[in-house]
Length: 410
Image (cartoon, rainbow, N blue to C red; front, side, top):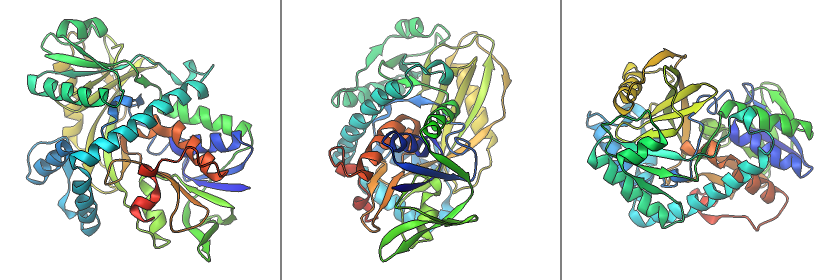
């Protein structure tokens, strides 16, 4: 069996790993080197604590504030048009509390299984990818933000995501660099972190050692005959395949549009910059009031922020970088930024219900989707690879209806 995978980020590389491990021939297509797209500059956080779907009341209110011109962690450009309007309507339906609770249960199962698989995949290679299972601190300056974090933690404990509410003094025991002005923190001990580019390169090398091939070229469309995919086509011509996996992240929708399929994925732009601090932090953190993260690895701290609906436009607004600098100044004591790396913008592929699209197409035979992971691409990469490999070889034991493509009729 020959499988073509479109996309060589964290998802595509890990799908290739699981398929080749089962003896299946794999060719991966991407315009860039492995991991140099959406995976390149993300936070590198592996976060069961992020098992609350993006489709929630709080995020809907953030979007409304943005449209009204008020400061928000989310920024929506009104000119995004009819496609964004349809996606937003679907998002608001999914944000109802009952659907959000069901989504949290699904994400909790997937993220916890994925962390088990990360341990397995990276056995003996933890240092090379800066892999550490040391938890994540959600830190708040205001009482309002801290109470919101506590409410989320309570909901996540109901789906078996462990957490501990910390006083300011307890939080500073975890991370001495934290400011004396913080109100408190919530600690999620099951979370982990890694260097995302190193992860993709490491996993893809393992797949190549088992026979996977990489072709650096653009894929424009799928070749479909009589309702069945028979390969892919792009700048390098046609490539025959028995199965095709779409793992192109935010570009998955445009790829499928060429085949007349409306995949409900929109790109949400996030930003990162690598910082050198005079006193490096030792903990993975999310600064709740300002939606800014801190991930320490390899002597630097990666800072991320933003959820901007600007299409695939890649400019970096000054206010986003200023928000990172302000957050680090407010949340950390006696810590200053010595130097900043080059700022980066990347695109999260978001579905309306906040759950990924994983599994076999309901429209086109032999087509599989592994996309729409939002901010959880690195976290969910291993379980996605396991699910896709099981689906391709015909093992239905690991199917999960809540993430199946047929919920969007694709």
